[in-house]
Length: 295
Image 1 (cartoon, rainbow, N blue to C red):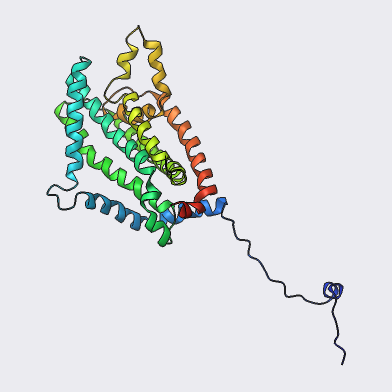
Image 2: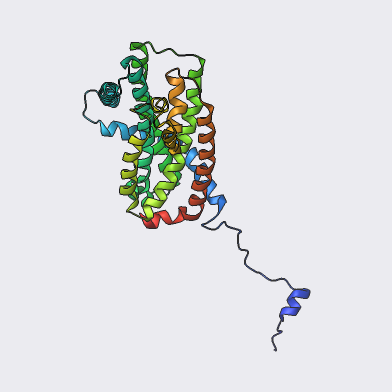
């Protein structure tokens, strides 16, 4: 019996073909996977919230005071620098010490996000390789840990405000949205610095050196307004505004110590936030899948 052969034209005319259906899956470099990573990481709040708190407890394990050492060390450093630089610049301690303490409070958060953010994926190498979890989980965990440090250190600000009777007004409420902006920027810095530093291991030491330099270039232990009042180099002093960290410090410090709100700093912070978030999203989209191979 001769076998009947079916040609491709016959199948097209009346036959049915069993062609495999390929799912429209997103590639490794896709916005869908990048945003899914962020969303899945956010839904795992109980996990990274617990891990962030355990990081702090582990650091002060077997200590009598535990996490209170965070506030104590912060108070000692702020007091020492406030007294020293207050004497050098001939500033009144009653106003200069709250200025320095609040600046140190904000700087500790910024410094933690920059330094620890550059090694966030390197430090979690084991979890990234063997735990099927979103990459953003480690970012949320770090930012949450730095937020807990910030809340602990707020005790120092409260003590300074009470001791020196710092005048506050309704503008103190602006510190809440200002800190939220700081958290968002801490997150994108962690994503961007973490991915780049995972690929190029020379980046973390460079970031550490630049961060140390930023501390002295940011008005934390010295006042920007003092430089502006000096006619000899007031114009050159405005170069300080090219330092982006200064604007983040000012939008939080001004309401916390009752200073007049300068909205120019808010505009700069808003622009930096938009550009930074966009850059971090592009980096996450393009290189998220490669981090597991780089660590």
